[in-house]
Length: 553
Image (cartoon, rainbow, N blue to C red; front, side, top):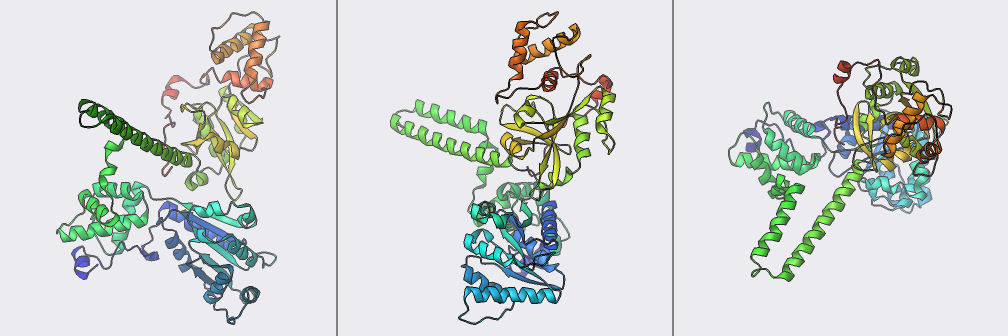
């Protein structure tokens, strides 16, 4: 970028270089969390910290910001090329830490030299840190060698701390059975996601400001197209912004619009921005397919039947591949809980507040007995211990504890009657934010305990029996009829048919059987009555959070 270009936009230096310059690090909420996790991990006594993210999301820049903030008593080694053998890696560590070794040193000699250096640093009050970028390329035997280096420890801490930075493949690599010991030593881990639209806009403005600009250069339409093309990946944002600024300078334009972004994408990324047109929606593809079928029918003399069939087959294959890709993307999205949601859902009281809100009750839970408060609204708490299938069969929203990768709990409200059109997806609410998660993803994290609120029928004590009053029996029959999709029968007492239908209801698909209290709770889920102490006006004023979206999910 020449000096005239910089002067034209009032810049002191190039704002969108792809070099990982820590001075230009835009600390989005995601990057702040990533840096906080690295800092926390470095301050702990454990041996390994892991930062992962897609290509270009800013992992290296975050790690370099960490290195710039290290205490003076820390000696750090930074390895950029991990495609090394175990011997080459140890030699590189020695070079980075200024450890002398002979030309004919064996693997043992290098290991001993590093361990002696770690002891010396510890004796002089110095910490030793090893940062490895692109760590997904490390061979398993090299990772094992690193683990052995971290075996040297005092009673309170490891003498070598290692930060592994890599693409998502690193997570898969560490799931290998032969690397489980290393995986168990990771004290902090974070997956860095791309930027949202608002963060992309702030990122662009941030870099321009650092470079000396005092005015906006990219209009909103340009930023929207940048977000679509780049997917929020900072490296691609930099490429598009840099090339579009050059285009604006060449055309004597003072602002960058979406036309210049489109040209930049074509030149720098060899990408046609037409593919980001709204015509790529599903309904448009269906219309295009219909047109494709009808037009050849009218001009069959031009396109033979054989060619038409071949084109249909190619189209079907393309559509199937697109569906598989979309399904995989959706599955990944529904098997992930963002760190923002996790950190906002640490308190059980927050989950109880949301659980009450699901009943249209504005109640702020505190450390007092939240279940005692339920009685004021004609509700009861039920502390459940059992399988996930039975919990869902109860049909009520319930609080379950999730655990992050460090074993720290956070809490979500799981909807047992999710109306998503799929039996494989659940609504889960974290601190007021509802997300869709795969049922199996939630089930694997369920620890056999939950708590829910339910509304017992009048005169109910602790079970349903043959001695129930006529009103309680009528309530049971009404809910059972709703559950089984049949007319309500008028009963004065339980008969054989009712007992058989109730027994069928109690047996769920998993083959398990509901207890008496679980049966009553499950039946009550079909009544959908608001607590009697909440009037209609209060209920009408409640905001429905079922469509709340979580940024980045």
